[in-house]
Amino acid sequence: MKAKAWALATCLSLVAPSAGAQQTDDLCDPQDRFSTCVGSDNLWPQPGGAPLFTVAPTQLPKALGVSAALVPTFYNRPIGFRVASADPDGTTIYAVERVLAAHALFGFAPMDGLQVQVAAPIFLFQDGAGKADAVGGDDRLPVAALGDLRFGAQVTLLRREAAADGPGLSARFEMAVPSADGAAFAGWASTTWAPGVAFDWRIGRVLLAADASGRFRRDVPLAGTNLGSQLGLNVGVSVDILDDGWLSAGAELWSLFTLIQQTELVAEPGDLTADVEPTGVPHIPLEYLLSLRTAGLMNGRLRLSAGAGGLIPTGPTTAVTTPNVRAVLGIHYVHDGL
Image 1 (tube, one colour):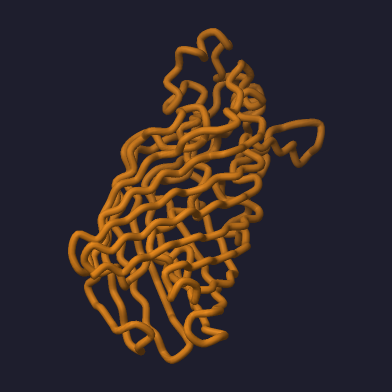
Image 2 (cartoon, rainbow, N blue to C red):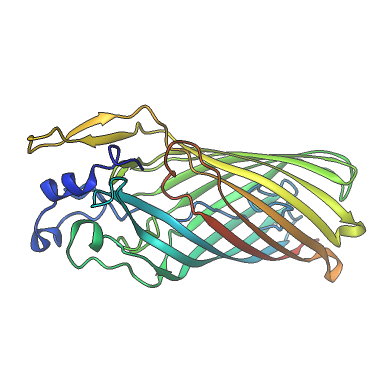
């Protein structure tokens, strides 16, 4: 978020409307180019209790099986930007600073290897400057909010026996509907269509896994960043420390590549207008997670995970929606059906 790339104090003072006019702006495509229709949490967990947080399960329940989960997460400073100030390097303002959120997940298998599912992200607590400190006005950040509800289905394409060596493969398709408060940085401006595929390979105590996905949605501007459709790639490894699933350790990297071109506002000295120019720097949120998991409780039906991680820089500035640090828990119950 260099001062040049975020020539925000000057540019916003030129283009921001008055507080009264701002009240009638479209929250998702405002005149000041500071949309609040942005989801601050990139983590989309799946029901099923897979060994890793960011790779969907490849082995789904049999007919009439159910999956239920609660995945709380805390993360810090996912949305910030730099404005001009007395400091030559500018001052950083965090529209969203601290967030405690949770995903409630449920899945049902009407037949072997097919699961229909729903996910409800809930922002239990958040604080930060919101939009008010960026462009003025009274648009304060809501303390709590509902995120975009997700509905979808997963299917196992390549099944292996429990704990057996070999490959596993699943595919899924989800739809996230724009049910979030438009001022809360809790959801997106339109429906998000999200296909995905997960692959893993077990070799003894080691599980190698990867997940590729897309999130296709309407584009929105957020200060000096353009956000919208994304392609995701997650990779990880899980190692069994104890037998029968009692303890395993995991490490994973997960990324989103934003497809829309990035631009910056450039104001020439003495010019009262700001030009929009391409930067050539892609927007790529990238995080890592290290975790521990036990899947030995209740004959393997109850699976508990805990992980922590944070951002990995992918450019000269932090990619907006990437938190500095993250902690996450996973509480999964899986009944394998008939």
